[in-house]
Image (tube, rainbow, N blue to C red):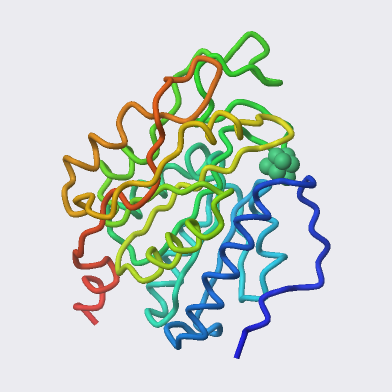
Length: 270
Ligand code: SF4
């Protein structure tokens, strides 16, 4: 039976915002997993932080928790420790998890906590109208950087590979089927899953044309267990900006390995 994942809440994202495409991908991903008896709705715990992405918890008919800015990961990992039967899924923004909550992100990856983080990566603080954040490219002009951002952005994939995440992937919000498959693969993975979802903010930093020309999917035979290959593949293809590197942007699963999870190790003592 098809689960009812919709709510009565009015969607208040800007008309055409790719956040809506992420919502559609997620509903499709969960619907298929439930219909295939791979997941039970009542066993999902969803989390969101603060930012435009955070509204998603109003639009999915799943038990959800909205955290303080950047603090969803402690809530996620605490929930997983308390009940290992739950599938823990977090939605975050790049400002939410790579600025405010970056310390939690790095340590959750280091511990290989068995949770899934989907980052709506639009390279700005969009909810507060386009200020530069940790993902904004050098040269980005916004309300807080009218003369251009003087900092280099993070490379989130390289950061998470270095921190110890056991599943690292990137997708593009406009590719609904591709994003759905990546979400399903992340959920199926045992360990910390990090998915960077390129989600252009069409109101404050419209990067759609930039990415449409540059994105491509990794070949099926990409060696997903090879950390060095993953690091090389994600290096040098930082997302868009006025002074961005003019390179192709690969999508797909860069890294996926099995390791004991934090919760498995923790429960050895119980
Ligand atoms: Fe989407 Fe940007 Fe509008 Fe936020 S401000 S809803 S990210 S288009």
